[in-house]
Figure 1: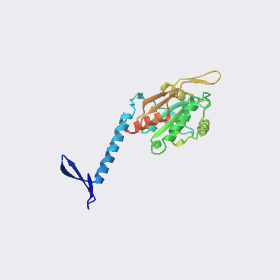
Figure 2: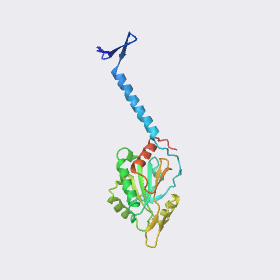
Figure 3: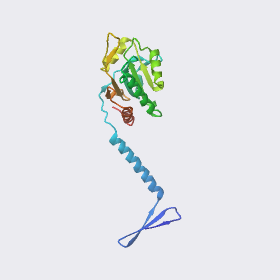
Figure 4: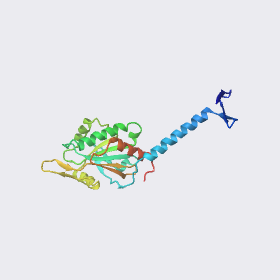
Length: 223
């Protein structure tokens, strides 16, 4: 095989098949362009193959609560963004429950910094309305170095909190020792406020939720 450089910048490739000499004009720029296109297509199909299936479970119930800065927050005002919703309380003494949930969500928030964090919101709803005031929630969040621009720590009056817990089937029972016996559950809610996935206990990793968020964001025409 012989390579010759022509004046036009194209390369002539000579090769023999069955004793017959063939000539083919090749434009390196066109070849490079085709390679890039193929790589991009491969990446798209690879993501599509790996993207998790996230069917609509049910419509997420709306709520009206107050965040750490005494601002009213409703789920309906967050249409167009992907939401991660969980339930916690400050005085949780089980290291592997509320504290671990908050630590993992902080890792998730850090991993979303950039263009993704403008399209996602984390909501931590306290179910201890008596103790977890907006001021207390803010101090608690600051212990985890939370960025409040896309993470709200929510509370409200007893009736509003009980309704949110009931709507999301979250169980929390207060004992005589003032300690809550409660479940651990986190919800992934899409841009149209549909519940798309439920993560039970803390049997999830920040990377898993990030992958699910990216799957929802890759399809803006969510059901």
